[in-house]
Image 1 (cartoon, rainbow, N blue to C red):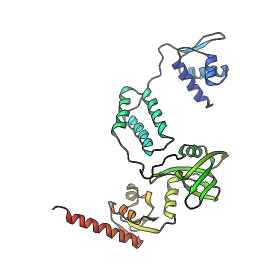
Image 2: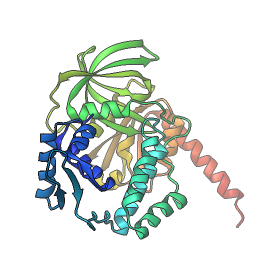
Image 3: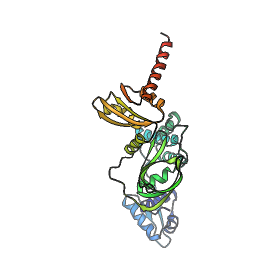
Length: 320
């Protein structure tokens, strides 16, 4: 049972709202604390304005003052929309350990929300659809909760990691942070097996066990920047360099930083990365709302010519 005092005080309040009358001994039993500690919890509730009546005597009981009710959680329509979209996004990400929590969280919210806001929450669920996860690479039983908790607490974990290149390895890992990129979850941190910073795919982690060993995360560490640079420096078949005829803010606005390193240059912004999927990358560039110049590789230029030829043929067949 969670032993944080604030959690216990709130649990005591929940019992007082549920039971019309409850003895100190019963509260102590259900909260797994002493009767003296229960008295401290009651005093804490009174200090924040919760009116509790205490009966005197050995078997004295506690009750909330008649007619007292906590007000419902008040949300604006915009706040309700944010909550609904957040819950919907978690469901669409299809994380096995998180999806059941969506239903329970939504049930709890709906139980305390005013009717008008509760309707808004349900309506969004029925009318909005998000396409976040790639259905061909949807994460399933990824240890997101374990690694997220370890990163927040700055506690080391032991990973059993399965890689096509090196097989199954066991390593201690300091998780600095996590990120969802290109249909997959990644964890970034210090790998003690290799003695260097590494990025791990969560869907390849067979087991993650928390360890009682603290670590220090570097000040100002940027998980997204590290992953972007890792992707750009991976040993893939083609080194890509493209000059974008745009400023840095415009390039970032179309989220190109997800697909390579962006650096301002004399003629705009240089995009650098590496890729195995040259045709796919050509299609990505073809959809940009500004001009660009391919510096390398020549295969990317050939792929762009093929896209341009198909577009020309499609335009020629279109009715005038």
